[in-house]
Length: 202
Image 1: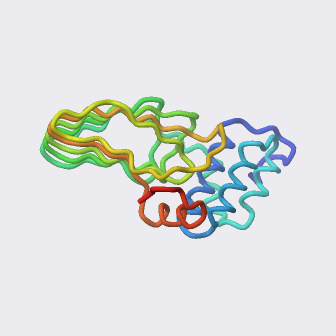
Image 2: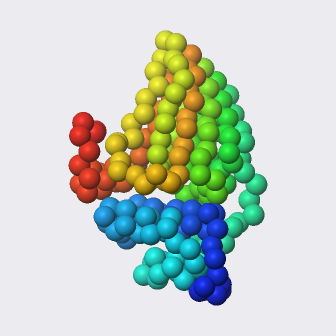
């Protein structure tokens, strides 16, 4: 944010990019769960570039730069895996809708370092004699719907105390002799459980 005047008004996309940086930093162990919750809340309430910049001054400058500057990547709309394996990982851009098809194979969608400019993303997961795995970072509201025939769909994301404007991922899973699941990485899940201690989480 240093390249922008501190009193410049920011957009929802600016707030979301900083919130994603903060979640990445928490996943790397740079912020505690309490610090993450407090800073993300401040990020969504920020009105100016200066207010957002205060939230990242003690984090690596290169990471902050990536969070503020849009990459120009085109959003991904499809991931198709047939009798093999396919994945979306690292820095990629999430569009409003993503369709994942896994036929006698496995497909992995990792959202932890993805660019998500919109408040909600809809992922349609179709698993036929295969599986689809969706990994989300802490701070994301997850909803899972759909049905499974001779298979199973599972939302493994623990309960979180999230603000009303937290980013949302809706996974619609349709499985035939296969399955789909949404989860967090173990380190993030354990950190969340230590800080929040949600009941009946695993």
